[in-house]
Amino acid sequence: MSKRIIRAQYDDNTITVYQAYNNAIAQPAVEHKKFISPPFKIDRMTWIKPSFLWMMYRSGWATKENQECILAIKIKREGLAWALENSCLAHYDHTRHSSNKEWQNALKRSPVRIQWDPEKDIFLQPLPYRSIQIGLWGIAVEKYVSEWIADIEDITAQCKHIYQLIKNGQTDLAKDLLPVENYYPLANSIAEKIDATAGPGQ
Image 1: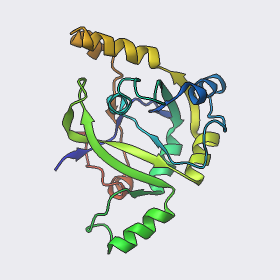
Image 2: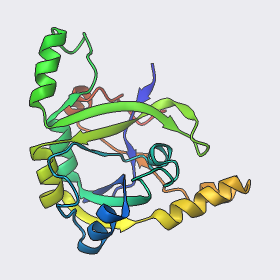
Image 3: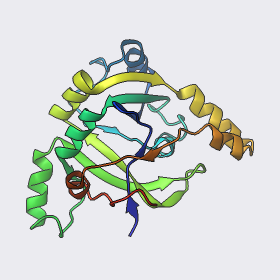
Image 4: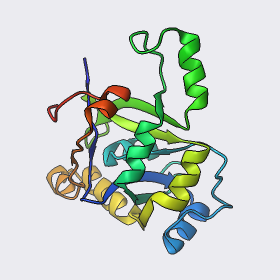
């Protein structure tokens, strides 16, 4: 079974998550340190990811359309705690739900969805453990935009620099520039709720 552990950059108050947007959304967000609606659509689900390399995989190192700007967003750890406490797994698990219908109803009620996907290495190939994606909608997006965000930084240039080093075969230099992501501790009740693996091992 693949390990499912949150790895992230964090301090006593915040945890860093990543999102990719086009310039129209990203630049006002960086300027104002919050997402401005419009062009940011508060009524749509938005996914946040603590894994830098999974964000690079998703955005193609900031090359995919409408994902040209990579944002590093510091959110309050209390905000993440609220999200996890009010979440539902994005997939049906018969050991956690009495029926598929019960899970579907829980999914519809929950403002947060949890998905575990294979983590990526620096070449964006899958690793034998999983990283979390957190989907926010409804009240969760409102809280994210208005309460949780402590800082937003455009890290696109750094991402492209790392990618260029990889393409040049300078993998060790590229690895030295990656964010250091450590095991993020969770209360047992939260770990159980989101199907996280206990303990910091891989």
